[in-house]
Length: 198
Image (tube, rainbow, N blue to C red; front, side, top):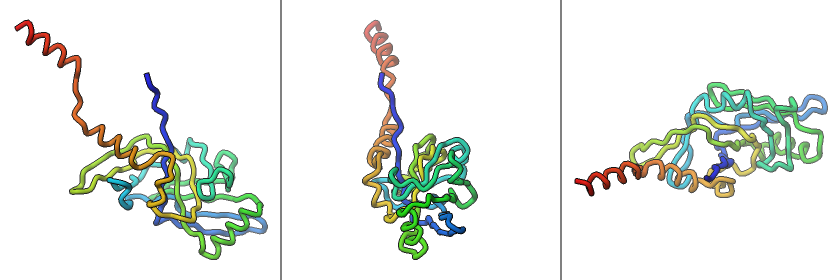
């Protein structure tokens, strides 16, 4: 018996936006890590969109980190520590993080303030999705996800997803297997026995 371990997927969000603010010595970042009902670029044979409600359980239950470039060495905040706030609204997955007073966070704050870095991404595990053929395009809709991190990123393009923990090829291969006709071997065996008797 094999146990299937869900793998993280990363999605770089072209529509995401991040802003910075400072309150005294506190550094804050806020923005959307994901937007609903927007069709992605081609992810290697399929396109993807996120349904409203996909994050509703995750923002209540998951232990989520805010990172820079999905790098766990650069933790901006964490919801279980009270330094990251997450909210799902009608537009998408919104976050606000109070960053640590470190040199790299101050540098990031300056880059965001200047507009050099201005987009976001998220890492997730799929809990429920739906696949549809829409003409010549296969569309995957994310219905419910487990949230691992929200990230401020420097390269917010779907083309960068080739470095993700779970490749788009693996995701699409699972979909293809679901569409393959299932063979009921027990039924076929019983049918053969009846044919041999007859």
